[in-house]
Length: 326
Image (cartoon, rainbow, N blue to C red; front, side, top):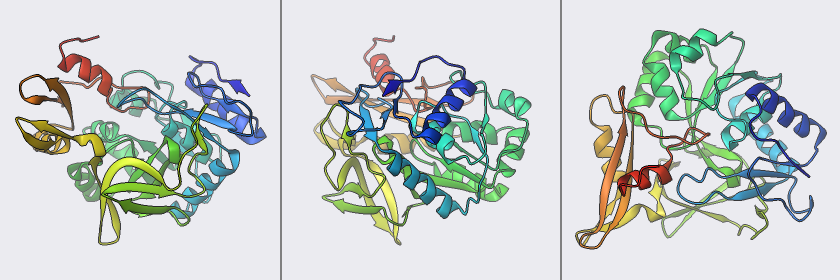
């Protein structure tokens, strides 16, 4: 098994990954641990590390091919060409590459600050669908050329975090087919679309926590341990009208002045402020109050620090909340 080189141009990295998938040649993403043998993992992906230390996750080619086939079946994708807007090394970007039947349209600006105007000026057309995080969606919706780009897509997958209701409503009113996806690196990205699990994926809730099982669930972490089945995601959730609703992380609740508070409640309150497109609540240990909560927001003037996959960099926000800005 080889480890892919870091720092390649997006189109070169995308082509290299697709070539490995086509040949079923085992590989590991940059920055991952190496498995003992290809019997334990054929493709090693890396979790985002947005809430803690990044982990190396081992998958098989069979699992990846099953996930690709399942996604295409749900979307009625008969061989779409996809637009890559996330790092090819991140799980969402990797699965976009795996899903695209023809060679994908690869935005050369990957890895830098997302600029919606720059993207639409460059976009040559020709893609049927794309995948992105909600912040990218919000910035595209703010410009006419971005709206037109989104309207040209047969599907726009939104993952990596919550899909704010306000953004959903804007997409619906503009005729944009946006789909909220739920999943993790351990499940090869989204395997629940708009609250409905793929056929073959079993989602259950035990003691409030979401558990997932199916052919797409990883064998285990690299170099270990193996994943339990069903896999406990660490997310809280419930069912509503037959659809999965994600309520936040299991570690989302912290004591503030003797009262348990959900960080998600702080975020939802901040999102009600006009112009706010994303909010992240960070709990900082406090000797007096247990925890104090600092809420960071993104709007037209302020930007959140981000990881390569587009998710907010929570570790950097924690440093800032502690007064230890990196």
